[in-house]
Amino acid sequence: MTHYEVVGARASDDAPTMRRAYLAEVRRSHPDVGPPTERAAREARMRELNAAWAVLSDDDKRAAYDAQLRGGGDRSFSAGRHGAATSRPERPFRPLHPDDDDTGWREESDVGVPGTEVHPALQFIPIGLGAAAILTLLSSFVIHNDRMIGLAVVFGFLAGISFLLVPLLAMLAGARAERSSSHR
Image (cartoon, rainbow, N blue to C red; front, side, top):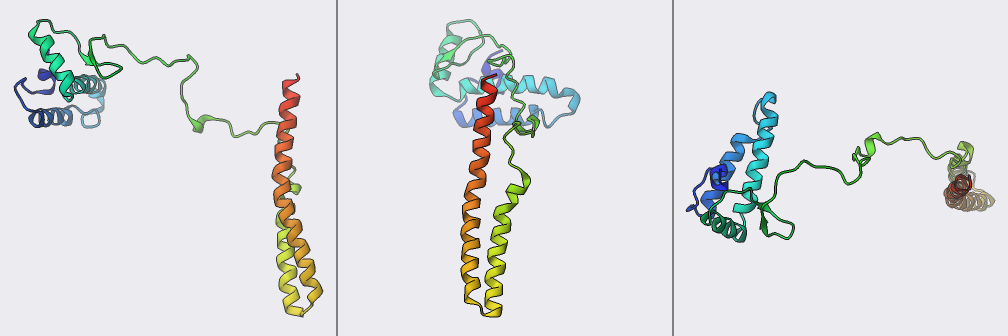
């Protein structure tokens, strides 16, 4: 069967006519359209349609394919690595590495690396100091005490420093855990 027969067109058809024939065939054969029992057959048909269209949609590949048809023989024809039309047998997909199944991030563990966690009390210190700064500032406005504004500034400065230090402590703990696990 030639690629023209696969897409439902003739060799004499122009590109828009051939594209319409291809799209009509795709609409009839798409795996999502038919019943679930025919899905495997429809997927095989779509692979066949797409392989034929990869050759017929490109003018250079189509010309080479037509020349091959005129020369006789009806081998399988598909798009090659550098865009040249080549003949090759269909083969199933195999991952590069046997353990590369690309399960994705949903199946990865949410458990952290042991030894890298920061104590929960330490995580709340920046928040507590920030809240203390805001409350001290608000209360200084209410009771009109200028010394409390200075205390609010100190709390705010300490909150900013602790917002920087807690992540650094977590990174240091991770580096320490990594070094200790590599020495084992």
